[in-house]
Amino acid sequence: MATWLRQRRLRQQVCELRPQLYRTAFAWCHDAALADDLVQEAMMKALTRLKTLQDDAALKAWVFRIMTNCYRDWGRRQRDTVDVDDIELPCDDACPETERGRVVLDVRRAMARLSDDHRQVIALVDIEGFAYAEVSEVLGVPIGTVMSRLSRARGQLRKLLLEQADQRSPALRLIRNTHE
Image (cartoon, rainbow, N blue to C red):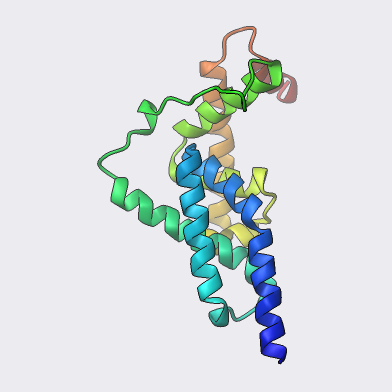
């Protein structure tokens, strides 16, 4: 009976991770349909493999690791067909032309220009609030690599935001205010 209760509790916890998984997947790929597909695939794999989870406390990192692998698999299949610089980011009702909307759009455009490694580490640490050790586990790299990628990614993101922003951009004001 205890095994059944554990499985039920873990399934519930996996389902509760869906919003975080989606935000992260969207931050990585900037495509709502693809983000949904990645989340669905990761959740399906996690739910069908719960019995293989060794440490219940590591569930979140384990599920994000599964999604990372799903994203990498997708990237391998798309390697020759998608150029991130050619992706046009739409601005629809979800991104109104407000100051906040422009900042979000500027950041999304800059994020889309980062390498996958940099985009992944920024999304996990800065958007989802993972600890470095958790990101290390999710991405399968040493903590030192997480720290150096994060430092480089933040610097590259700052540089890209400064390059793409016009002088009246709210994103430009934010960058200047936080680094003066």
